[in-house]
Length: 447
Image 1 (cartoon, rainbow, N blue to C red):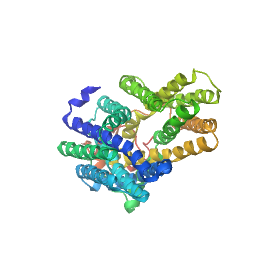
Image 2 (image 1 turned 135 degrees about the horizontal axis):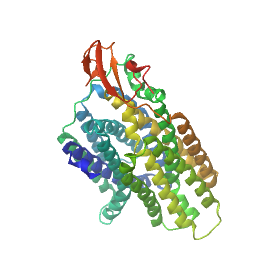
Image 3 (image 1 turned 90 degrees about the vertical axis):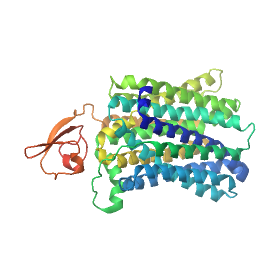
């Protein structure tokens, strides 16, 4: 898996991702403490609102960035996003009102919504071989999982001799280091973008329309919802299970979240070899089906009155959630890349980023509201039904047999059309070969 790090440009971009994630993790801890300083007992509601603002920024900003990404230098866009994030993190220690926190969080997450899809769209161009790209996706998944384990531990260590507001300086350093690494990376030249009639709105919705047009991407939308149901249960209700339902100590909250991360990492490490033999569809649909089974087991655990077995059972359930989510999330980039032409990838990845976070925008408050008002059993049933329904819908929407890459000739396109990049001239047109995609030149070829 580490062989892809021999690519100097990818190595620098991956380093940028790592340091930015570490900075974000430190900011998460510091933000919780800042909210408590400002709002006291209302800190939970402040953080909940901040999380909702984060998702709104992701859902609303990413498509706009996708619409404009082909008109902006990608390096400048990514560096600018890092600098904005660094400036916001530097400002956070100085706020004294809740509304100021909300404004800065929106600015921070809007910049992240610009950076992340652009970063994701660059990687498949940088690593065109399927095997290398799969390894890069697994490394990215590992980076997210390690951040969830490493950043809280680092924050705890730093807080032994620093005040929490100094943690924001670590966040600033992470984003600045990310900007330096991006500046040092030789990014590939993007494919010329296809002109989209209708202005900015048409370009902003092009990625979403692609998702609605391609069967495997419609299935991916459902899979995103299944993952959001499980991850919301873990993110929102872990503390409720550990501290309230099982009456365990605060340290066990981190232990339970670590079990989720460990399950995800184990699968991410194994998937490059598995995906060399098994299709994305098989892996991802089995992961979604496993989520439904874990919800069933969690329902039994939640409704049980007592017993020492419940704590290890919760750890197993959380690890299984992590493993199943990783089965769905890790190959996602492969599915998006296969479904969009090079000139459409920025918009496609922006749409995936936006639509997946729209699912979390639904499931996060649902997990919290149901758990608090109707009880954990009701939350498990509701989110479990969402996950099961989404898994079934994905299985129906994603064709079991998909056409292989096909060689074909275009006769109606002018020389220089962006879709003809890499095509060879033949009598009467241009010949090339690729997997079926939804695209104007392929109205009869899409699948």
